[in-house]
Length: 202
Image (cartoon, rainbow, N blue to C red; front, side, top):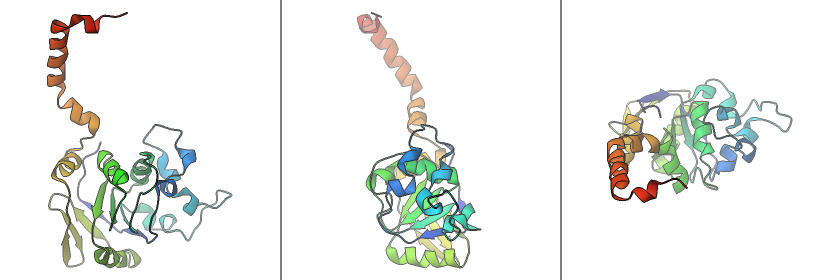
C-alpha cells in the first residue's frame, strides 16, 4: 500500500446522499480480485449510458474533475454491501480522500485498509468545501496535522491514531503482519519443538 502523503487537488462534489457500494462499483466488476483496472467501473451507471457512451454532464467525466484526488460526497457514503472493490475503484481512478458528514462503517474501515483517507466532517463544512469544487479551486489535505486547508481557512478533522499511522506508513493488514514476522517465526519454531505432531503431513 502506498504511503498517504499530503493531497492537494480540485475536489469533485457529488451531492447525492446514501450512495451505496453498488453505485460506487456495480456488481459486474466484482469478478476480479485485482485492485487495478477498476477505475473504469467507478460510478459506472452514472458515468455511462446504457450503450456504454460517456455521459458528458457527469462530474467525473469533465475536466478538471476527471483528475480529482479528493471527492466530496453526501452523507452516509458507502452504505450497502461490504464489497472491498468500492475503495479499490476509487483509488484506481485516482481518488485518495473522500470527505462526507457520515460514512457506512464497513466502507469507512475498508478505506483505511486500502490507502484512502475518509474524513468525517460536519455538514456545514461539507457545503463550504463544495463551493471550491464549483469554482474549480484546490483544497489541501494534511494528514499529519489533521487539517483541511482551503482558501485562507484551516479546518481540523479527527482520525484514529492507529489508522493514521497505517496510512502514513503505507501499512495494510499484510504489511502489519509482516512487521511481526520474527514473532511469527519464533512461535512456529516453538510449536515445532513442543508439539511436532501438529506439523506432520498426512
